[in-house]
Image (tube, rainbow, N blue to C red):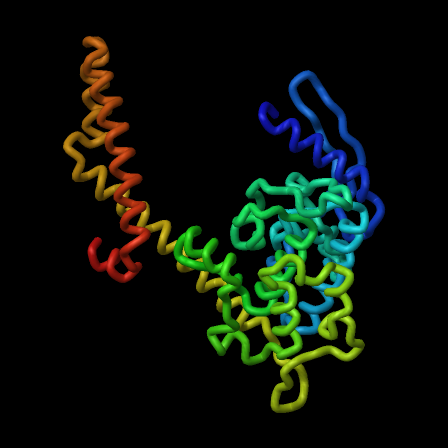
Length: 333
């Protein structure tokens, strides 16, 4: 636990305020400490993560997304009313208590959360969170507070409606620049044609780049997409709501395939670099085995070559990933 003790103790302090106070927040039942470790005992959530649950459904409508967001936002409001900002809201931290159809969805992982005094609502300045869900003010280091959770909820809503996140880019630098500029669109059209304008307006409201005009959790809950008794949807020809699941899964699987392809390209590039290095790792390994009883000079040379390859690999990959398209890299391989 060395180096992380303060985070764990902070999480305990946060959960003491909110645990057991809301059905949609994970409960800290107990914690105990040994000479080397600190153990936290939480609810056992066996219902899986949010998006996995959606993909397992036979169908999925805009009203389902609105219901989920409404429930989560009520828990966020409770967290904020308790003087806490979560700072790492994302689908992976939204778990279902049980596999049952009507199981509660739970906000988990309060490791980055902070207890905030009312007069210091924008005094947090460190960069933290999951990049795609982080608000502009976090990157800009202008001070942040509870509004960052509303921004994250906007990203989550976008994701639940389309299957991909609004600021997804080819690099983290491009992603950060898009977030700071609020540069996103409801495109491609095929993924958004069955989503109502009311839902899109809700997303726009949450993704306000100015934290001072971004709605609070309480105000967001009053938006007509969440507050209306009648569900909002784009009707099919028969008048019923459109099923979002096919497009959501299509977009999600396409992104997953892209990431897999990118990882494969990185692996191929690594192997190419190693194969063409003056002294390959394999050769150095043979040298070490053959001359292991010789002087330390051979060992030092092997270590130097390995280090040189590592640096070359890093620089080459960084350059290629920044300037060469996927097609070019595949063709070049």
